[in-house]
Length: 254
Image 1 (tube, rainbow, N blue to C red):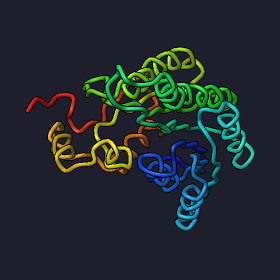
Image 2: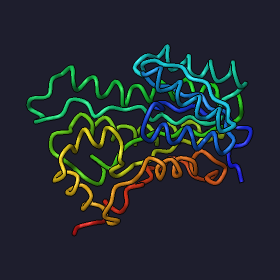
Image 3: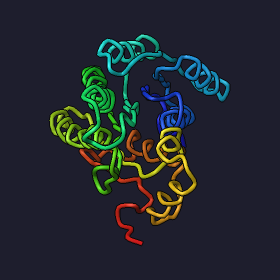
């Protein structure tokens, strides 16, 4: 059964990884999809892939740090498809890594601007449009890092992504009476470009793999299915949650 028939969905960070897998799945489940990221060529390829499979999609490249871009994505959804029902704010960055005593102010600010402020700006305009529809679902990509697990050298990433949990709860409480649900997923390790950049040796990847109860990392498609649940009417009584999709990393001590 197609779970997003007659829905219009927006996905940021859609050029690769979890975002691309989710946009593809949303379209396969019947949604009309607006995809955003910085890289136009990758977005065009995604749109072509969705259309070749019989779906409908449109792309707009830009920078999630820009409020004008956040508004333009919503405006595009309404102009092309008439409404907005689902928004997956997935765009993110690892940010400047290394000893926290050496992280620059600019590096810190950049991580917060993309991971936290960019998600807020997206939600600000998405929710304003969803209010006109009588409801919707907003989803953020947070992380288990800084929530149930800590690593040295990623303070900006952990802090900015953890901030999304507080944002999720605040927005869920504020807009729940209007039928707008807001949730966050907290992935464990996922085999994406960011994961490989952060873990670029066999030893590092083996260490990360062993942190998970399942003794493997996730595929982007596995995370996409969890996002689909939160986007669909299967989760109509779920809001304000920080949903661990972490392969058991939060409970593993072996």
